[in-house]
Image 1 (tube, rainbow, N blue to C red):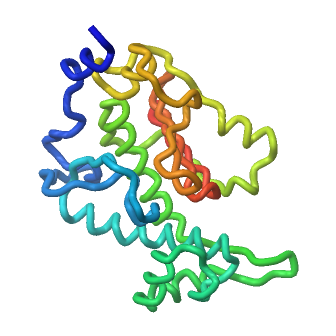
Image 2: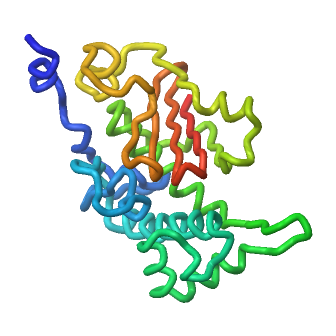
Length: 236
C-alpha cells in the first residue's frame, strides 16, 4: 500500500475539540468558529491553498484578529522605519493603517528616534498573544497535540538582532525525540517518508511565513514572520 493510501486511512481530523483551543485557564468555551494558522493578515494574496484552521470560540477569534492585525502592521512599519502609509510595503497593511487611525497612532507611539537610530517599543503582550496562539495552532494541526496550558518558554526576537551563533541555533531543527501521533502530518513526514521539503522548515508563503513543529523532550514550535521576526514556543 502506498504512503498516500495509508494516510487516507490513518489520518484523523486535527480538529473536533470539545473546547476552544485559545481559551484562558479556568474558562471553558465551546468551539464556534475556526482560526487560520497562520492568520491571513500575516500573508499576501493570493493565499496558499488549504490554509490550516483550528477550532476556537468567537470571542477568542475576535480578540486574536485585532492582535494579529497589530503585529502584521507593526512588522511592516518596523521594516519601513515609518508609520507613513506610503512608506509601508504591503497593500494590506496600508489599507489597515488608512482605515484605523487608532492603530496607526498606537504603532507611531512605539517609535522613537535616538542618536543610534530608530527604536521601537512594541506592545509585547499583544505580540506574545499572537505568537502563542500560532504555536498552539501549529502544535494541534501538525502534531495533533493540543496545548491548553501556558508555554514553558516563549521567545521573540528580530532576526537581524541575532548573532551568527544565535541565528544558526534558531534555524536548526530540534528533531523528533519520538514518533509523532499516527496520522499526524509530522508522522507523515518523518515515519512514512512521504515526499516533502528537505528542510525541516515548512514554508506557508515564501518571504512571509514559515514554521517548524517538533517533538523532542517536549513540543517546540518555531516561526518566522516576514523573514524578520523569529519566534519560538516550547511546552516541556
